Length: 241
Image (tube, rainbow, N blue to C red; front, side, top):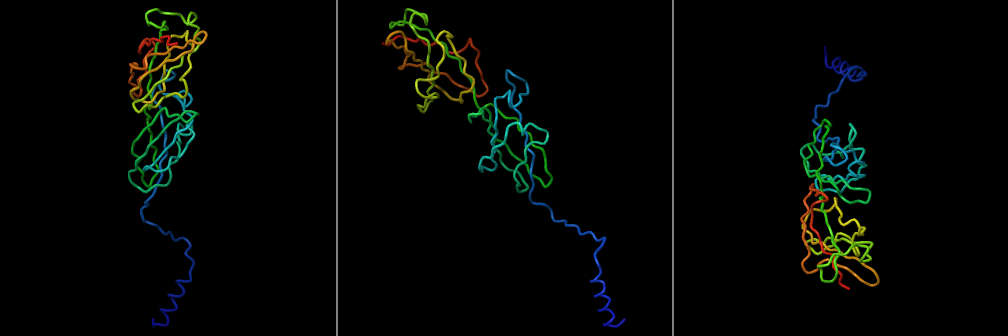
């Protein structure tokens, strides 16, 4: 076969359609995604709470300290979960924050997120980000030695507040209003830390009552620890005016 014949045969081959040919790309993928699901710790409502039972409406996710991405809480409790962004293959850091409808954080988690070329399902069991405290009160006269009922003092509402180590108050204004007749209140959603506790109330006429400002009782809030009604300090709500 001469050169002219070879050239003609090659041209004919190149002109033929590639029907039936399979081209395989063996280049490994360098990116992938993961499906994210989350759970909440047991509470008084259920051993494996739903979003509603946990009091959560939204879950925010940050990957590699990036911007927070908002998800509807219920979407992360399905079998499919929610999809992460497209990420490079490898191990990433992830932070999750679960909040109520007002944006107050109840649960959180910091962990790792493995990404491979094949999508995987990653479950995160969120931890409590808040704890509880119980506060009791007794109304007294100016001396602090004679106990009064709420009716005798004319007090309808007692205002409760907590001050953290930086001097910040948990509740704005006078504090959290609670009925005087209750005699105590259990709090379940306070950030961990050490707090001074204060009480205030307005009584009959122009009288006013306060707990000690000079030596307030101190409570320590631990995440996931919720005291019962029988625990916690008892404050004297003493008449000061």
